[in-house]
Image 1: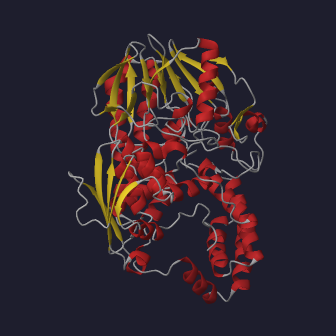
Image 2: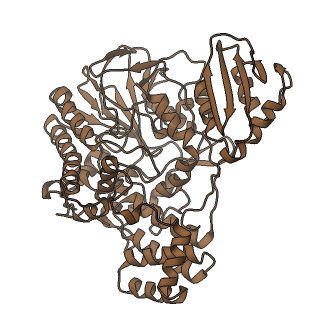
Image 3: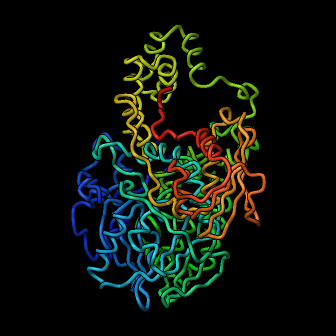
Amino acid sequence: MSTAGIAPDFADRTDFEDADRGLVSGPASTKITAEDGRVAWDFEATAFLREECPDTADPSLWRQSQLCARAGLYEVTEGVYQIRGFDLSNMTLIEGERGVVVVDPLVSKECAAEGLALYRAHRGDRPVTAVLFTHSHIDHFGGTLGVVGPEDDVPIVAPQGFMEHAVAENVYAGTAMLRRGVYHTGGELEPGPRGLIGVGLGFAASHGLPSLLPPTLQITRTGQEERLDGVVFRFQLTPDTEAPSEMNFHLPGRRALCMAENATHNLHNILTLRGALVRDARVWSRYLTEAISLFAADSVVLFASHHWPTWGTERLTAFLSEQRDLYGYLHDQTLRLLNQGHTGIEIAEMIELPPRLAAAWHARGYYGSVSHNVKAIYQRYMGWYDGHPASLWEHPPTPSAERYVACMGGLDAVLTKARSYLDAGDLRFAAQLLKHATFAAPDSTRARELLAETFERLGHGAECGTWRNNYLMGALELRTGVRPVPITTGSMATALSVEQVFDSLAIRVNGPTAWDHSLTVLWRLTDVGQTYRMSLRNGVLVHHPVAGTSAGDADLALTLTRPQLMGVLAGGGLEGIDHTGDPGALATLLSVLDEPDPGFAIVTP
């Protein structure tokens, strides 16, 4: 898959010049290691990208990956530095009067700490005086504990709605999103020409400890101005763009504009393949217009939470304008065609970018793609149903596959046909046939290997890094089976509100198992001064704060601290916990909770 239209100019080296500009120092070591000995980040993993593009990679994606592989401390402009190539994302360091403001501290604690140490080695042992999260994705807050601790009295700044959406993605739907995220980022692929060559936004996500501290200062409106360590920040709220909670900011004293993840050097996702809320391409485009109006004329450099900066007022204005047109065009043309009766999958085959956008390197589909973004826009407006009544009540994948295979004359006939399509180069239809074959006969070695070969060839030809990773991860799973990786949100649980803790409990209730149970628990949390009443009825766990602390008709009332609450919910028992009533109510509650499965199959039943 590649973007249709005019190809960009491979002789244009502007991006390489910009990516190398301002280098202060490369990494101080070749690896970043976690406390338990795991390698959180390996700088040598990208060494193969110094070679020419092989025939197992799309040349455009190879070029993007070469750019993303650059690692070190970079000066963006006076008083503004970035750590790049230490993780999937960038960490920005803005020098103030007393220390440094850290923006978006990467995915993991270890990488953020190593990046801060490199900065301090060259700019002095400046204290962290504030932390700023541009948006609610884990690669922009996960390394928080690598730059500050819970005991540090510094402002933590984030856009309105940050905690709600950070928890929704990483806790409520965290297991499924992280499992699919392994496909999305190619988490189990070996780095190299046949495997992982990048994600488009960066090379990969680190394997250290993710963490989170809750914000102490919310940005609630565009135009809001805050002085952090003596530096003036002017904010633009951009909800429902690249994240449901996101913001850009301008540093007027330095004429520098941070676009968060709303304008980077690729076409981004309207719906990421790992799963997320569908984003709004229409408002995304409009917020970019607003950013141009608010900040462009007063900026001489634009930087973001991924990739490399753009220097010069004229250049950055053109960059923002083309990014604006990119999302606006996809939105408007999708709506035009759906109003003519076309479905999402049809529109995805029909839309081509205008020549000027197709020729722009920063508009290429390295992370998002025209194809799946168009389907996402359709989904936002029309939902999953394509309007055809036959789509209303289809069989699930396995029984549907069994029927398709039977109709086509059995497994051998399907595999023979699939091989013929594969040999003819129709990889897309070969994959469709072989998906049915593997779901109808999951133990067939021949079916699995044919589908793995198909996925491998599709992956090696993909310009989109996430498509490549999904295809190659699918091939790996078919050949070696599911290899569950430890999935953890690290210390994120400590940042959750009590309500969010109880919400995360409610989504684990096995409804049918809990149907016949009825109980009420009162939770008195002394250290936070809150009391919650929780009831289990009809397989639903309902909770709400109450004004008093009387047990009333509760089956069990507990008086405890928030840390004790976490221990009780983890199965630690009631020893040392002040309680009245029937402890069996707690045992019943815990007995109806399901454990999430971080190793569910994706390409097999």
